[in-house]
Length: 435
Image 1 (cartoon, rainbow, N blue to C red):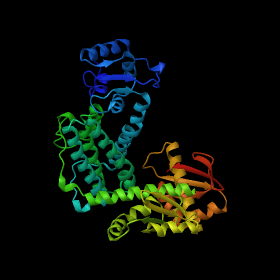
Image 2: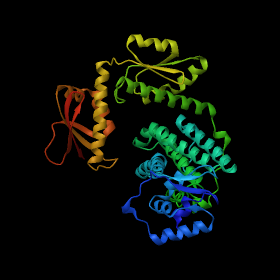
Image 3: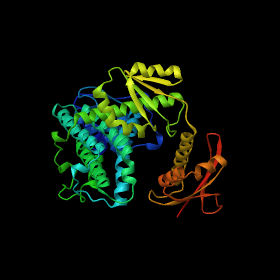
Image 4: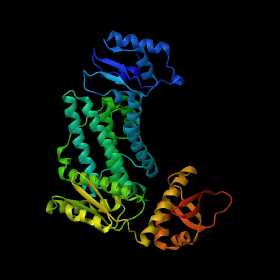
C-alpha cells in the first residue's frame, strides 16, 4: 500500500466508513496511477476498511499530511472526505507551521546560529518565558490526549499552539531576529524558537510522521549534539512543570484578546493599522487592582500591537460614555473599546512614513532582493512627500526599516526598480536599488 494512503487513513478503525463528500471536486490533471489505486483499495479492504476507489483517487492527488489533518475526528465516527477541508487544513496549519520554520531557518543561516548554545534564563524576554510556558502546557495536554486515545483533540492543541507561535511570538519578536549583531537577547530568541520547533516536530511525530521527520532532520539531526538520527527514535517530550506560568499565560491572552478587539474597532472606524493613534481606551466591568497589575505588564505590547501612543483603561461605563464625544465604540466579552477618529497632523505624517515602508518592503521582494541586502531608495512626489523625507525622525525610521543607506529625491532611469502609488491623496513614485 502506498505511504500516502497508509498515512491518510491510519486513524480509521476497522468497520468505519470513509465517504466522499458530493461537493469535493476532482481535477482531471491530477489523474492517479490506476494500479496504485487498486493496490491501495485491495489492501484497505483486506484490513476491513470500507473505502471507495473514488476516495482513494482523491487521496492520492493530495498531500498526505493535509489529508491526515482533514480526517482527524473521534474514532468510530464516519469520515467524509472533502477536498475543501483538505485545502483548509493545509492553509490553516501546515503553511503556518512551515512559514514559522522558514522564518527561523532564514535568519539562523544569516546569523550562523548553532543549536545548543547555553542561555541564562535571566536573559529570556517575557515573550520567551510565555511561549515556553505555552509549549510545556502543550506537552502535558497532548500527552494526556494520547493517553486517553483522543488524538483529534491532541492535534487541535498543536494547531492552536502553532498559531500562537506564528501570529504572536514570531510576529512580536521579529525585530530581535532582524537586528544586526548578536547579543544575549538575540541568542535567547533563537534558542526559544528552536526549542519550540524541535519540540513541535516531536509532538507531531504520531500525527504527521513525514512532516515531523522533515522538520526534525533539518533542525536537529546532525545539528544538535546527541540528537537521535530520526524523530521517530527520539523520546517523546516530557512536561517540565516548573516552566509553566499560568499568570503569564493569562496576561498574554488578555493582550491578544484586547489587541483583537482594538483592531476590530480601528477597522470599524476606517483607520488603517499603519496609522498611529494618540490613544485607545478599554473598559471593564470589574476593573480593579488585579486588572491594573495585568494591564501594566502588557501595556507596552498593546502600544506596539495597536500602533497607539497611549493606552487607557477603566470602568466600562466610563469608556462607553466616550461615544458622545465622537469615539467609535466596540464591545466584546464584556470589554468596551473606544477609538477617536481625530488624528493630529504629526501622527498622519508618521502614518505616511509607515505606509512608504510597507510599499518599499513589497518592492524589495518584487525586485528579488535578499532579506539582508542594503538598498538606496529614491522618491518623487509633491511637497508633502518631500516634507516627510526632510523630517529627520521620519526619514531615519524609513531607512532603518527598509535597510536603506540613503534616501534620494528623483528616480534614475537605469538599474532602479520603481513603482507608482496613490497614498491617501498624494501621487508617489518610489524606486529601489541594491548597493
